[in-house]
View 1 (cartoon, rainbow, N blue to C red):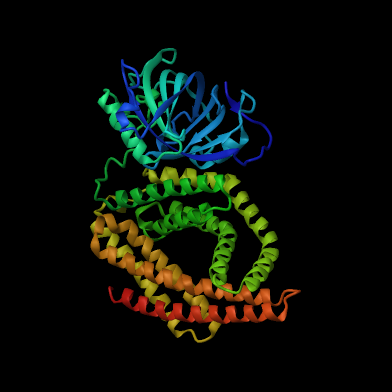
View 2: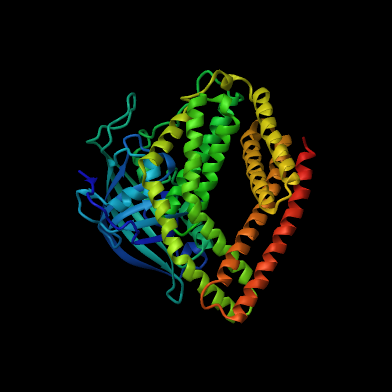
Amino acid sequence: MLGRSSGWQDRRVSSRHLETERTYELAGAGVPDLVAGTDAVIASVDDLGTVQLEATYVDTADLSLLARRVTLRRRLGGDDAGWHLKLPPQDDTRQEVHWPLGAYSEIPAAVQHTVTSLVLGRSLQPVVSLATTRHRSVLRTDDGTPLAEVCDDRVAATVLLDRPAGSRAPAAESVTVWREIEVELMAGDEAVLDLVHDALLAAGAQPSAYASKLARALAEHVMPAPPLPADHDSGSAGVVVLEYLHEHLEALRAADLSWRLDEDGDGVHDLRVQARRLRTALAVYRPIFDEQIARRLQGDLTQLGRELSMQRDLQVERAELLRTLDGQDTQVTGSVAELAERRRSSDDATARAATRTALASRRYVELLTDLEALTSGAALSPVAGQPATSVLPGLLRRAHDRLRRRARRAQEAAVPEERREALHDLRKSAKRLRYANEAAEPALGKDVRRLRKRAARVQSDLGHHGDAHALAGWLYELSRADGVDAHVGFALGALHAAQLEAAQEAERSAARSVRRLLALG
């Protein structure tokens, strides 16, 4: 039995790669002659022989990984033994993450850490055991370049998961056997897959109806999606907002997974964006839910955004600095970049640690668990059953009026600091209005679509304004650092002035965007 590992382990993965492949069902005859069937693009087939593979797939009892098209297995045999996490495919391509085997009785801590947002504290357990006899061949060009690998698999699957009530799935001790062909690109491109596809279909093969071997083995065990509230039709306010919340909770989970695989990537940005979308829906459409629950979740999402803000702000500053330095004198660029990195190294470490702490906390897992319950319709108010077309417009009007008040305050602010703060608040209101209209768009159509787009423009203009001011302040601090010579100091001063001008232009653009937005309502 696989269990949890004890103690802390390195959370970094050993390798990550993209695999592009297609899978086919082929009964009876063997793999056809792919040299003759591919117009000589494939010049030869290199037979690599047969290998025995054993894999134990793990998931939660309710198959929360498989429900999101994610698979996690421990494989023995072949040249890639270890733990494999396969992420949802995009067309024919999906990312695969590898960790070393570790002790057989333990699921490595690094693996458990990576899938935190998907399992939410549920135990991982073996769900399927696969024994595969794999015959491998490599398709090559006339100069020996490997184009693709063809795997002729004979699979025996044993289901280890208890059968759901009423299922006709086989008992756990029974074995399901099938044959499939996997074609994975190596140095070739999609055209090679297309040629092999045609040759296989001509030989009687059919594209597999399953996303993975695990999905096939558990075809009758997959849990259905949680039903929408039985007493609400698809046009009700509750259903419209729940569907939006569900979509962006899943997007937040995907962003969490992305961050855990690459702490310096875009995952922290995507986490904050999805938290903001969820928070906006709960704030603007609060009357649709139990008010106490909605307010609590809204507050927890606000706190999460704050905890992630330091790392994201530093990422934005770095990107803006690199953009500003583009085209500058190389000596200046090098000196400024060195200064910046010297000042940033400790900040980066602190910011990453803050994000790790937030995403490792019990509070975070409880927040996602509560959001999951909310999206199942567990905390709807009587308003939720009313038609979306009668409920949502009035709630959107409140968000629009909020932006109007913030715009007036920004216009009246005379002191520079107060004006910058007012413009920052206006940007938040524009973002709130944008996301609120985004949630209502499926029900209300083109009218809110126009509002959403104009609100997004205000948000963008004011984002440029805030970024330019932040970078100007940072450049000023750099100019005062020890060891800055006159040449670099002058260059920093010029860059500082350019950022202040960019902020003024962004503010002028935002004023035009605000007028266009308010003209719609």
